[in-house]
Amino acid sequence: MKKIVVAAVKALLGLILLLVVLLLAHPLWLASAVKFAANSVVPGLTKTRFELGRLSLNAYDGRAAAGDLLLGNPEGYSESIALKVGAAEVVGDVAGAMSDVIRLKEVVIRDVFVSYVSKDGVNNFDQISKNVSGPETESETVEPSAENSPARPDAKRVDGEGEKSKKVIIDRLSISGITVKFGPLPVPVPPITLTGVGEKSGGVTLMELGDQLLNAVMGTVGSVQDGLGALVPLVEGGADDFKKRIRKGDLKAVKDAADMLKSLFK
Image 1: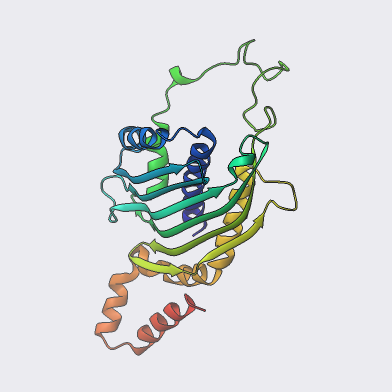
Image 2 (image 1 turned 120 degrees about the vertical axis):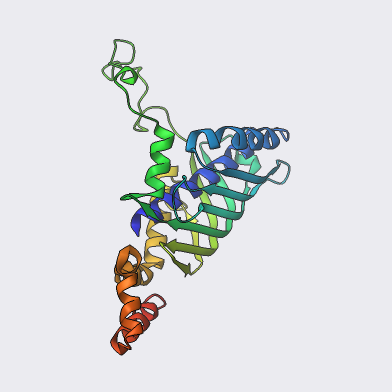
């Protein structure tokens, strides 16, 4: 269960980052250019269907919004959609956009659908990641040189310790209308709301925001995770045996199924 939450959180963080970048960039024409580029480039990277239906920017009141985002699953998977987001909106403080800490008054994400399915032992998000990474070849391996060696004091760092990165403070972040489909079973997840994110620490990096969001989601779906764990035998091949027990009038099978479903909504 945690894998699917991590994948979804990364995708939502990417969407938030895109909207923040638009706010920082300011040119009103940039939104249409980014939307065109995303719809043109992303399908070639993921090897899946990808659609970004709406992307808008109003730099005057600090609003950036996206909607009707859809990421499909690779061919051969039983579920056609990996991730779908109905709407996402960021309201920022334009006056402080050039500072090291960006204040976002509100981040609202609505109608999120995430699926987690496997094929030949590989789940959909792992396969999409492999598609994006591409095949590893020896020719792509770059040996350290004198110019990019970590020993050089001016070398660029990939761990975020080098150039100072932007931080954000989010007054209110809310995600609602969440559905997680684990195999054939769609499960509604309660709304998630975070307030004062980064307020006490003077801002958080995108990675720190991801950790907070992940912890909030995992805490919210704790009971759902337990219920899904009980349903794994049905999802991963036990369904036929379960059906046979039902046909034979095995009342214990009915009780077991009822208990599993009730545990999802405790």
